[in-house]
Image (cartoon, rainbow, N blue to C red; front, side):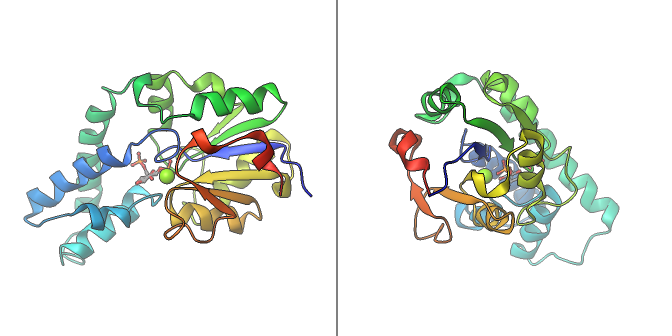
Length: 217
Ligand code: B16
Ligand code: MG
């Protein structure tokens, strides 16, 4: 049995539900481009990088190959400006249930913690919700070159913590993130539906279900 020495947390969908703000901003862009973008479409963007998300959105609207790289960068910037406006209103009331209690418990028991997010806005969010102090290290979209499912974000986190990958567990809400954890050869707990996150070791619906005892593999 392996005893876990470090927990790596995804941000969007695990610590806070920023997916709703990403959705609002992408929907607004789609609407400007003249097509509908539904919540079901939005599922495909979870854990995916900003530019890859734009490609998926354009595919949904049958508008791929219509724009130059420069135009696409402008669109992504526009979406991000709206998103930044939405997240500037966030505060600690948006931290998902049980997250703080679980993190306090593991840290008190000597388990290290890292953030592993591909978002370039991760530090803004952590500052707004007052959670910077809960992490021994933060790896975000400004520190990596390869988005999930590439394992870079989690491998970098483990390296900075000085913990071997097989003693790490990743908490993830997205298929791409679970795949990244698997590619890093780490344990993985899905946050969300077991039907969607079927490659996780097990899933929880909320951190209120998590205990120290469940961190043994
Ligand atoms: P940004 P995570 C991801 O964060 C989101 O799930 C994904 O929807 C978003 O496109 C991506 O960050 C990039 O975010 O545009 O803020 O740089 O789930 O890895 O914490
Ligand atoms: Mg996520």
